[in-house]
Amino acid sequence: MARSTTRALFSTALLFATANAQWGGFGGINGGGDPFGNGNGNGNGGSSSGNSGSSSSSNSAYGAEIFGSTAEYNRAKSILIAHAVLASLVWVIFIPSLAILLRLDIQNPVVLRIHAVGQILSYIIFVVAAGMGIWLAEKSSAYGIWDNSHPRLGLAILAIAFFQPIFGFVHHRIYKKRALGKAAGKATKAPGRTPIGRLHLWVGRILIFLAIINGGLGIRLASSSPFQTDSQTRKASVAYGTVAAVMVVLYLFFVVAFEIRRARYLRQQQRNRRAMATKDTLPTYDESEESVGRSTRSS
Image (cartoon, rainbow, N blue to C red; front, side):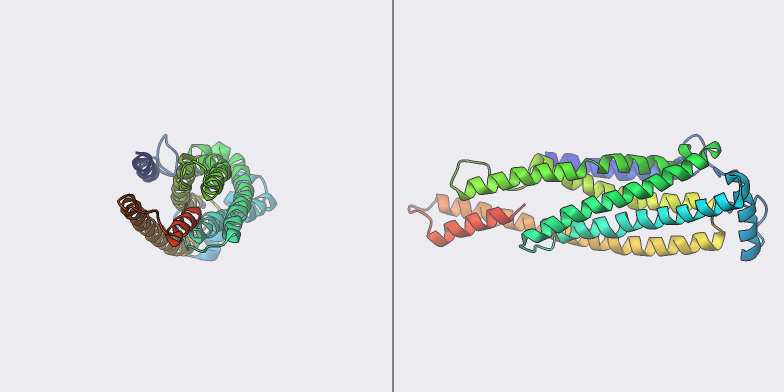
């Protein structure tokens, strides 16, 4: 029941994000269009000349008009680049890689520590990136940036991701307590996935996909700003799309492979328990040790 519910939640979240991007437009939920009020989507307010130098100069002039001065515009452009790079590293590289690390079936407690510490550090980096995005949105608030899908979804991801370390910590404490009790021969639930562990798992998966989608929304939003020319937007889209697609494929491969392996192991456990229940004698020492050893390693 819990697994079907979380899968439904996962599918609904993806459908919502896709629909919001298609129907809400990048001018906000209240209508499509360019939040910066440009006709050509690159900040020069006129027809595209195809000359990158002329386009960049026009963008700079228009950006200085928005931000008050050329120096402030250049500062905003640097912050935008830092925001995009840091947020992309966190959600396209760091967090998916650290999630994959737990699916490699490496029997070493150091792996869990790397996962936990790495995810917390990744979140801190994302807080910094989000702060930059909030600053940019405030500077451009007169142009309806807060009505756009990208900052709204970004803030939702920021808020929900705050609880992920808490979910993971509580799950680990419960799992460890059950494993120690099982090893000591106490009457306790078998160690494995807890309800809060499933919540941690599926919220993490949803956040990864929503954040990758939101990165694409951010690139499209930047394409209508005075910060990027059409050629820069195309390059950013290709680079981001390529890396994100590779990481999504890798992430899905390891997640699916892990779930298949886990399902096979659980079925084998059930068969072993049924076989032991039909025996007239007690299980051998090796059978008992194997059962306890595997159950303390599985989560």
